[in-house]
Length: 100
Image (cartoon, rainbow, N blue to C red):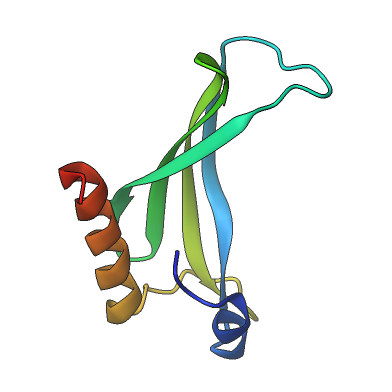
């Protein structure tokens, strides 16, 4: 995401998975060469939603929607994304949509 994990830790927050929905299409086997992709589809106050997929060649093995939440490292309570990070994520999402 373009953010240093050590810097995040120093600022007292972290990301946790808050929602996960997967659809398994085909089984993968040990030693299969797999490609995983993730695209940001929504950025909100304290959450980021990704569309993810895992493929073997052109065959989709699994698709999923993953939402991560920004939380305070000590209390575990939700914490709003910083304006800078939110702007970076929205720009990345826009670039994917426009292909730039």
